Image 1 (tube, rainbow, N blue to C red):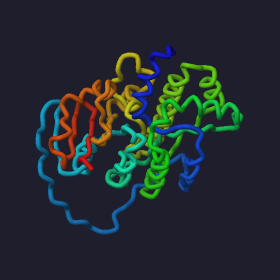
Image 2: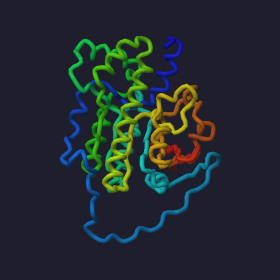
Image 3: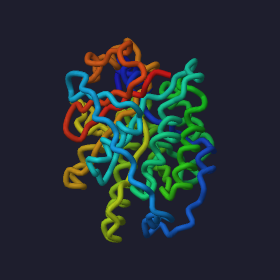
Image 4: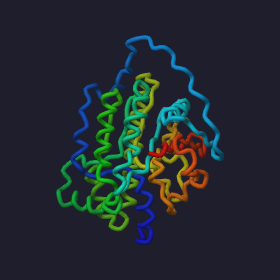
Length: 312
């Protein structure tokens, strides 16, 4: 990779999930149910009165822009599309923004509970070595990750672990990615191209894992979702030219016969006046100063959503 490309990749990967051979993913609880079958859907213990119908969202402009009173109401509109795979991406908190609740925290606390009984699994964009690849090699790979992770808030990865734990408690089985020693070899040998090799590896591992889970659900007759959670890059349904190998969206859409949906979760305080942000299709249509208490939902294309939380 030419060195002139690295700053652009780093800017893009500010929105990508934490990764590496950190020990914290081991804190995810071991599943008690068989990996060969989806967890059973929880059954209601009592009859619940039907909730009042929420007010219709307000229209707010181009790209099918809608305003909702709460993030939950906006997310419910996405779930109404009835996807088989929901690819969730986010823009991660950067250093200095620790006082603002992140997308991961907001998703865990507000939106994840809405998926209990609707989703069987969540694949998290955290990767670890599946074997003993050698301390020196693992250290070198960690060094090659630093351009991507060094500006992220230190609690990003811990919040992913908290998300996995919360999902498990709701009956949604969490999964992390397992990179082989061959993958580590490829990253080390890539040199200046190591970031690209990591991007392609993450995409491949997530794609393979999700397809296996979808096939398992289909065989078991479980009409429930599989989720992914990571950076707002790998989940793209329509990748920009040159980024096709960095996203699993098109392949999973084909696998599910069009029942794949992507949603990017955005904290408005994290939006920056940079080329990477300005390149996003919804950016020129969003006014951070307007409707600060509302949740904004854009639909740039069929099966593609951008949910922007209210200001903190």
